[in-house]
Length: 330
Ligand SMILES: [Zn+2]
Ligand SMILES: [Zn+2]
Image (cartoon, rainbow, N blue to C red; front, top):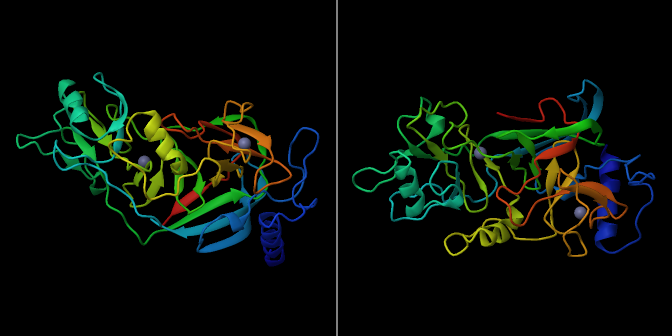
């Protein structure tokens, strides 16, 4: 394990210096599938608390080798979320009501649309009703949802060292765990519906709770950890494509169109929208993935891309099998 990690780091340094690629690290067969070597490369992850290898149970019932990687919660600056009044500007949200639905900035037009739909989210003093879904209880009336961070959690991710393709694509459900960013931030499927009720809350027909998302595409879970519903490295492009960049911008993540973003929970890497040749790949599949060389995998690897325009912009399915308890926290 130690020796393997050392070799991987040396390979990374060699490739970063433009050295010769190593034939032993990753090998493609004629189908482009990886036949030997580990895909997960801990040197691509920023400041994990610990990295170890252990046997894990995959969701298809088989046993595999997994990397167990732990991080502290909330490693980056985050916010803003809900604005205090109708005249302030907060983060962003995805509204699924009748009037002016879609991905938008949390400002006057959103609250007026919600009021038009019968959701009483603004009080008589023009203050926004803000509810912390981590504080428990049902959603009373309508609100902008914003939770309280707990910076002392340990997040643990189990990632298959060698991805194993599933017999069919695994669709990522709303708020389902999708992967881990290079900073150790959980990457999550679409945020919950504003009008149908978020996790743990039952919205009645006249109540809505819209989760506030910061301009980098993340927010605090009710249990206190920051997580991402977007590939944050592309947020400047996504905000611009949705005509929101005059109001909000992502400052807490380095913006890039080609960088490594993290690992999906099936073990395949996730990249920003473009390949290393600076073009958007034309051959991506229904999971926004394809097999080609990347800066980190010069011999080729299956990998996902995030969109530079859609909101959310993450893959909506995964090709591989993930581990049981792929993400836990305490
Ligand atoms: Zn969320
Ligand atoms: Zn690619």
